[in-house]
Structure formats: C-alpha cells, structure tokens
Length: 207
Length: 402
Image 1 (tube, chains in turn blue, red):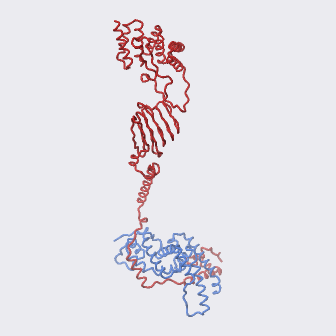
Image 2 (cartoon, rainbow over the protein chains, first blue to last red):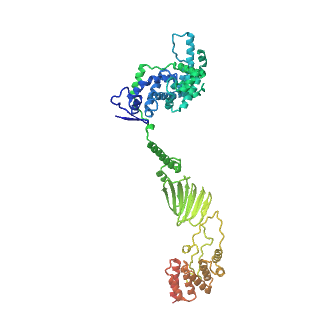
C-alpha cells in the first residue's frame, strides 16, 4: 500500500477493501504525482469537456488551437501535480491551470493577432422558433457579448467565467487563483459591470 | 425596509453566496432585485456562448498521448535546499579563481595574452648587454603570481633595456651595496668589486637604493655616481727612511676598511652637499695642507684643533694625521709626543700598526735603535702589507748598523 502526501492530507493510493465508487480526482492526482500516466489519461477523460468549454469561453480559439491548449493544460497538470494543496476541487484547480496556459498562449503576438481576427466571426447557435428579427438581434447581442468578454482583461474574465459560467464558489476560486475572497468579489463585480455596460442597449430592449 | 447592501454583498447574492438577511432585503427592495435579475440575465446570455467540442478521435488521441508520455522531472521544484547552497558555493569559488587569475594578477605578456607562469619565466623583460669583463647573473624569481627579475652585478658594465612591466613584476639590478630598480627603461650600471659605482639613465625612470645612503630617483639623462673623496689618495713620505725614504700610509679612503667609518654614497646630479661639521672642516683643511706637502702648516692646524677642543670631540683620524704631519715636518719632539698621545688614546685603533711603525722610524732617526727594533718587531706580523714591508726594512737597517 503506497502512501501519498498531498499538501497536509495523507491519502491511500490503493483502495481499501470494500470501498465503493470510482477513484477520486485527488487520488488520481496523487498517482499522477508519482508518475502514473494512466492516472493522467483518466483525469483527461473525466474533465476534458469542462476544460474545452472554459478555454472556448476565455478566448475565441479555433478547434486545432483549442485541442492543443487542452492537451498542454493536462501536460502542465502532470508537471505540477505535486503542487496541488487539496484546498479546492481538482476541477477548479484544472481550470486555473488552463487559465495560466491560456495566458501564456495569448502573450505571443502571432496568436493574439489570430484571436483578434477570430473575434469578428463568432459562430452562433440558431433556434427555429424565433423570428428573423429576433434571431438577428440575439445574434448581434451574443456577438457583442463574446467580443466584450474576450476583450476583457485576463484576470477579470477568469473570475467571471469560473464563478458565473462554471458555477465555482468564490472561496474556491480564491483558493486556486491564490487570491483573497474580497479580491475575487471585486473582480467579479467589475467584470459584470463592464459586460452590462456593453450590452445595455440590448438588455433594455429585451426588458 | 433594510438598508441596501454594498457591491460585494450584492455580487455574492447573485452568485448564490448570500445570507438570509440579504435574501429578505432583495424580496422587498425592487432596485436591488432588478439589479440581480439583470445580472443573472447577462450570465445566462454568456452561458449561451459557443463551447468547444472535441471530436471523439481527438479525445482518444490526446488520452493515448498523455498515457504514453513520460513525466519530466521538475528539477527546480524537486531540488533540495542543500543543492542550491552547493551551487552557490561552486559559483563563488569559480568567481574567486577567475578574479585571482585575471583581475588581481592578470597574466603578463607583450600582447596581453594569457601566458602561463612557465612562459613568463622563459621570457625575461630585460635585455642585458654586458661589457667583456662584466661578471653578472640574470635570473627570474617566481613568488606566487609575482615576478622579480634580478641582475646581480659583481664587476663591469651592463646596459639594460627593460620593456614595460606589469603590476606584479619588478626588475632590479643588485650589487653588494645597492639596488637599482626600474619599471621599463634603458640604463647602464657600472660596478667594481661588487660595489655600485655608476648608473646612467637613457630613458625612463630608475630608483637607486644604496644601503648606506639616500634613495636617488633618476630620470632620462640622469646619472648617479659613488661619491669620491675630494682629496686624492695621499702618500705619507718618511723623509728619513734609509732606503728610498718613502713608505706609504693609507689615506682615509684606502684605510676605510680599518676604521668604523661607513662608506659614503651620494648622487652627483641633484644632491646638495650637507654642511660640514667643525671637526670635519679642520680635518679637510689639515689634509689639504698635507696633500700640498705643507707639513708644518698641517701640523699647526691639527695642533690647534687638538688644543682648542681639548680633544674631546675629535676622532682618532685627526690625532693620527697630526702625528704624521709632525713626522713629515721633521719636528722630532712633537712627533714623539703626538705619536705617544695617539697610541695612548686609541690603543685599539686600526691605525695602531701604522702608528707603531712610524714611531719605530722616529726612534731610529733619533738613534734609539733598541727601542726602534722592539717597535718594528711588534708590527712584523701586521696584516697591512706596507707596514710589514717597512718593519722588515727597519729591522734590516738596525742589523746593518749593529
């Protein structure tokens, strides 16, 4: 039986007899810290959709870039598995790692230009039960929202997406981003305010 | 109605992180409720933004790649603190070695290249041109990272051209009694019997350091000479010697090895002569008269010196030459008195043998042969050649008379 130390928590890598359910994410991360490649693949299969969605909301990446970003995120998770402190869920921690990977990616000037070009063409979902005028207005508002969200500063949109779109609690976001909770709430407030100002016209029409 | 919450509280309420009190306020405050509803609507709109959806092939491919890849060690993250200390210590040692070799004691060489110590030892900075009769040695002494290049001159003339030296190099010419040091120059050194005689500088700067005189700094065109006595070597003549009537008495310079008087070295180009003391003035005056064969006047000078100072501050040289002056002036009574006065005052004098020999001739001239014979016998084994020679001559003359 191998004993793995993760932060202040000591967990048993091998499951106890009679233990039910799948192996927890934290245990997989502990196995990954010991060099288990299968644990990394299992983490990927469990959380890749959330990471895809998070990254797509954070930046208008094309599919190939998105695939690369997700893969790079899990490679970074393997490198930093021993740094997981156990003070937040693994999912939140994965999104924080993805946010850092994206930040490094956007810093490169060529990628930034590609993102700027992609901002002009955001594919939008269509529904069949709305009028053409309503569909056009909705597409315009969504395009504007996407453009404003992607153009927001990295630290504001990270907090906004993690808290409001991914549904992670403020305390957990503060833990994985190494921020105080007050800072998280302030950034969330600022992000919401910027988006509401940008969409004020459409939101007034809707109401 | 309760008071409206602040921004942070309202933000937390929208994120379902509010308290019961805040929820109650939202129920009764239409402004705050509208604020929350608009923000929630915004969030719902944002959730409608397109997501990324990988294909199943992509998911399978990435999962396989992640499973197959080997973990890379994060050296910095896994390194123990001790490794950092060792690394820092290693870097410090390397920096110290570099500074020692290239900063404090940079390698020498004409082109500034990194010559080794061995190369330095094989490439002297001084080019020595010596006279045919010169006796000298040329060596390089290695003292850590410092080099002393030394020419030890015993005899003859050497002309040396020294290329500019580094801060850790010295070039010196040494004799038994002086050191000449340069830092890149052309100069000539002359020595006789191990003693420095002359230094001439053609270019650059030379330090002359005699052991018993002040340091002289010579520049281009400067010259240093050993001070020679202004009076040439005299020869005391015994007018009544039976043979040639002449036997030498060593001059002050020639007999200097017999006295405790030290050598006088001085530079000739820039020094100002120091004022002479009284006894030296008297001595020079009397000696000058002796040199001019004005023996009676010389004897008077020496007599006046002795009588005026009662002999307290006069050295044995004056008493000796006083006796010699009387002897040369044929003043028999005063000669005997002066010689006995000298021998009584300075029984340990190096000139005692000469005095006894002179006293023997004085006795011989006054007809006291037996006493003269004793005096000649006492200096028969004298270390001074001219004393031994004259003592033998006197004894032969006494035997001839008998």
